[in-house]
Amino acid sequence: WSMWVLGSFSFAVIGLLIYCLIDLQRKQFYPADLEAALNQDMEGTDFESALQKVQSTSSCLSSVMEAGMLYIVDRGYGVLDTEKLEEVMAAASRKFNRGRVRTINYFSIIAQAAPMMGLLGTVSGMIGAFAKLSQGGTGDPSAFAGNISEALITTATGLVVALPAIFCYFIFRDRLQQLVAESEESAESLIATLRRTVVASHGEG
Image 1 (tube, rainbow, N blue to C red):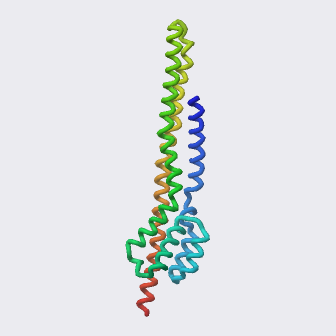
Image 2: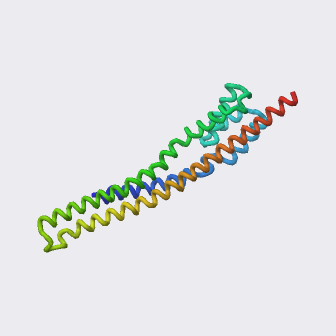
Image 3: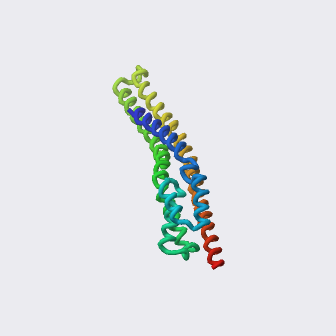
């Protein structure tokens, strides 16, 4: 019975692996065309055009820039050099990627649960083996050999499922952190462009 559970764990790992390979792409976080278009809007302080772009697309950069621009519109250009603006943008980034973090954490859950399920199968097999041993004695080892085999197979299967899961957890966690960091750096660069434009326009004025 434990092999059915371990089999479902293995299919879950494969499904999560395929999902993360598709989802954790650069275009899902900071598309190059969107970044270039927003840079032009920041140079012209065209918030209306920029907001239309970020609200019509779904990416980490879009969410971060939308939160930042709405905060600037609400509070004025004086917030460009404040830590509060950075906090608002970072909060938007965390909110956008909350589901991805939870998905990647499933790898860790399976990596911890699979060996425990294998151990449970081992205990179940050994209980059955000793129960048959107590009933029939040691005259016929084949009577309880199947239970011992079950115990060994479930332990090995649990480890086989857990090892890829833990590797996937660390690989995709680091990949997500990298993409999020690059998205936030892109947003900070766009805000810096806006800051230079505002400073230059005030200087001319």
